[in-house]
Image (cartoon, rainbow, N blue to C red; front, side):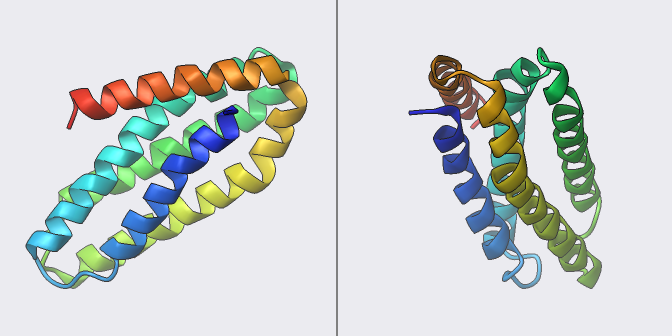
Length: 148
């Protein structure tokens, strides 16, 4: 498996959770559970992805701007999650913020898969792509289990 397939597995989970989250109503157990799952998935994925995809790409001058942009978007999503944590889940404002987060998640994943992956494909050797997949998945699985 190469790094792109490994990353897409979590991307699919993020899409599904964010889509389900914006369908919830009120301060329900379902909303709380989906938000907790999405928050956890975003955090585990972003940390593992930054360490085992974006930082290696920064070793090439052509990968610096791309990596910095993606890491900045991870930070924006972290701030959106924090804002949701500070908002009453039963308020209409909560759902509006959750929709913005979902839109940001979808935008970021689309950009990664249709722009960043193509550039990274040119910068990384096949061996690197395979090694990074193993390192990413190892870190992802470990953090997912440790912080469950």
